[in-house]
Image (spheres, rainbow, N blue to C red):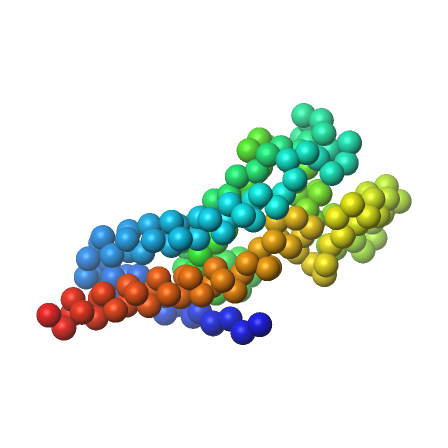
Length: 170
């Protein structure tokens, strides 16, 4: 899959210039990106089961399972690892519980896991196998929808560029 490469410094500079030209342009860009990518984020969140995949995650303690909600943020180039994204989609539990992260990520980096950990990973893999790295539920769905979300975001940015170009020429 070929995805457009985003230079974080260029995006930050463009946002500064847009703010200098008209502060409402950046607000409009954020609003359009959130509104158009919102349905994708909801579909990704809906891929996470409401019921816990294992009975041990069904409790209300710190490792319990809770429903999720999506959030979308416009953060050009603020990634911890690569710094090359424009929009972030996050799936957050509605309560401060880590069960979602355990179920989603168990086995993605399992070197040196204890016998209990290997058993957890084995049972989760039987119920919802993980393909590669990333996750079982939300990330699996996100991977399928990523090309469409990228195309949509690129289209919105190009539309804004056209609007700015028309304003500058007038």
